[in-house]
Image (cartoon, rainbow, N blue to C red; front, side, top):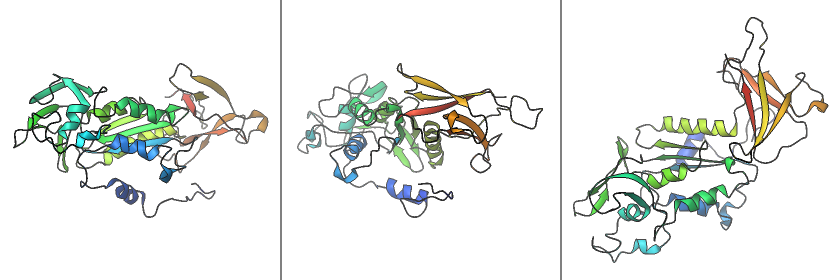
Length: 322
């Protein structure tokens, strides 16, 4: 929470990177049937009293998935049946290969036969696992404007997909990527999930020795979606004068990119201290702190007075650049 003097009240102790590390470091113990999508649903479901109040109508919601295996969100608990131990059994030996066999469909659609696979996608009609579409619908349904949902994944590459064999001649997935930190299975279901959030999602590989670049991309996506008031390009239409003379248009947009998109063009304020009769209006002001790395050091300010905008409104700035 930003204070008037520029300082901030944090809801965590220590540094941000230490806090994120604590949250993300879950270890490798526990069930080998990873279910990040079902974990997400149970954490955000209204029936979960522990997180009551976490979903706020006016707030953006960002989901970040970090895993070296694909999603195995299981609807039928017989997936964990330990009595089936043979390759001839319906479920096959107890291993996370079941997650691939019953959760992913490829060409050829013969999961237990060794060899490469092509055109893999989520098996939406699985008898044992929840469909990916259920989680897409659930997450988008948490907001009146689905554009307020952001999804990112640091996961195994979704290709190549190859079925191999372990030392007991049972089928297993070959890793799709390897790094000094380990190897990862192809994240087919997770990528299918994230792809349902165009312009609001990003997939980054977990097979890098350093995940800083992946986290930076996610941070850039958050800044893009939530909004960065700093003007990145050179918008001075007349560099021969000392003043910056921009050619810009500012609009309030609801449901951007959808058929029901609504756009309201705002007028430019007449001065740095506009009369309330002009509200809402926009102006540009120099911000040498927040916008120090930009060409003009200008940021966008929208003067609304006590006025408000509908939930899910995105303010867009379009300028001629040079």
